[in-house]
Length: 361
Image (tube, rainbow, N blue to C red; front, side, top):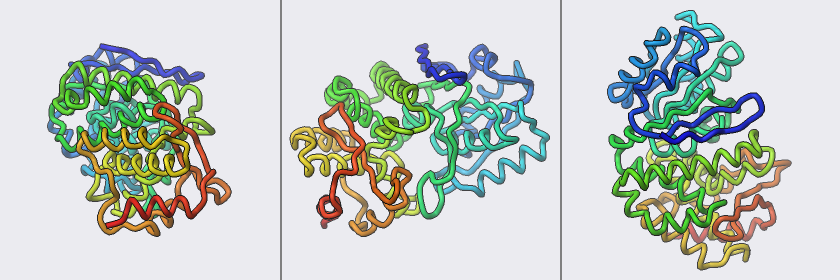
């Protein structure tokens, strides 16, 4: 087992990465404040992994389970309200620990519930997808979608710990694995050139689910994210680089109604657009932009927006992005592989040109 620390004033916590962790009661015990725990999971994960988690926690606390429907379309306030109804109805108090068992949707919803219930209760992240293990479970971003925009309602709220059992990836569909690899590629693109080069050489091994390769990719990704979060927990500045490709990707997800494409698929196409814009602005050498697109292609992820989506759709939806400040759109761009910048130094015409190119039939 590897342990990475996220060091924040008064809110530091460990990320445990390894195998056979779900049933390890000793991992849970230090992070459970009292004797009442609510495990929130979804209908896909519950039959696969709830039993070892519940059994492990049962040795130190009373455990209840609440199952939500699977899918990004359920990441909304209606689902949040159902969980609140259950917690109030079962007399959960402010020391009840919420345990998120599932992918990014479960983690984001559960974290937001924990942040809001009685003004904040402790919670633990147990991510079961590659994307959640390398990204959404780390850093304390929680929240839900609104029909007009992705993740528009939420809170920064750090977990007590993150338990990433890589054995859960054995049941992960290939499509979900590839979606997680999109976020891994992101870390190399924005701040870790050596890691990006390693990914170029090892992408086949990752797609084949080589355990050593996956463990290294997860550890390196979590280390990269924890370092960024430690420097800028609440995204007042440089943490925004973690959103490379996400402004375009979120627009795709919103346009599709949070169905059809996975989050990582939308981010992959978004990273290609962001790299193209970086090259268009002469910030990034075209050969490096091509490397990003080629790696995403090798991963089997989309490099273009969905059919039918036009530049006007992007521009309308991007106005609602959380990085817009005083009406000025800010994007994460690259000056080289391994170096990202937050920039609003582009014209509407330059942005529209790149979007038109990416959406051309």
